[in-house]
Image (cartoon, rainbow, N blue to C red; front, side):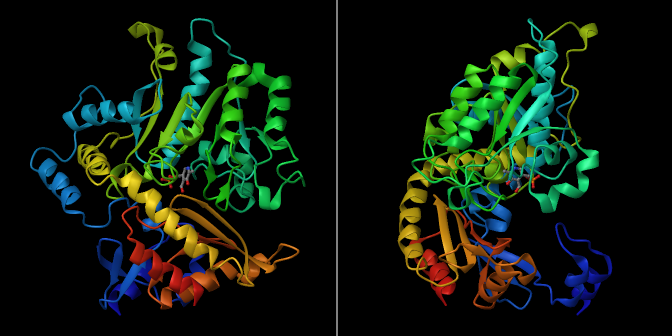
Length: 440
Ligand code: PLP
């Protein structure tokens, strides 16, 4: 078929072993509606991963389509370098209104990775430029198994060996702490007796190194690409307390968890935490267009104010930063969160999903099920009692998700973890459809 041949001849797919791709029959998605994707032959698939974790109200939501059309009649793109425009202004004000308290400034970029790059550069520059400079504070602490994106700065603060180790010679050095992963505790401890030793390890490192640490970066409540690792209650709160106590900035990467995914607008709200820098992307435009933002505080913003010749400017910004079409659809997306009471809906369907997931717990392949709202990881194991993982070369995650595709559900695994990230608008009937296929 022509399209398949052209794809194989020219298109290099992200995070994809292209030799294997050449041997497959690629699924070509032509259109979508609500929670479903349709291929060229008209076959329908439930979008179980929200087209890489982005779709909120569904595909082809009339209000979102209309917002883009309406903006197209005005201007498709104009720059934020030296100019400004209504959708970027309105959206910045709206994000500040929604974000945890104290985050009053919004810096746009185009992807989750760049939102993280911005946070890293901002934190670094802040310590050098504030009225009481601390230029030694240049280092970053991150969780060992973290994923914060694929650009060089974001990879530096990441830890998944498969994605990061090869690039180490390109990266800046960081300090790492064990991730809170109770099913496979890196400290070989157990809850609740462990006293959350993983967080206290952060405290120990801060007590020794705080004067050289610019910031700690975490993905709050649930680490997504790390394998859907759900954090114990109180973890994010403890990290916030430690950062405050040791005068270190806290960056919360809510690229995956933001915009209702966990049942809260932002996951850190579940722990009553406000970070110093908040990175958002994915769900911001409802899954329509690339747009990201890094929100920060007045104190950090103030460190970048100076006379023209002082060069305290934040030297960062991409050509399409704050694109008007993307900002317009983001505003319409946020309107729908209110109109559709999306957070209430997510909590309701997430409870239903939790009930359905209980049925999977006894399956011989299922080791652990981790859920926060509509963000779920099902860890497949070779031996349940011993929690023995399947060897990576068995590609067990892919074997399961490929089967699901045959039954009309699109899923994408992370190693041995089957990820469920359906659109926030998913109905209970569609959750049943998803769960029934998983059980099959
Ligand atoms: N941060 C987190 C927590 C993510 O899950 C991702 C992507 O999955 C990123 C950053 C990178 O986002 P992007 O792929 O839009 O660059």
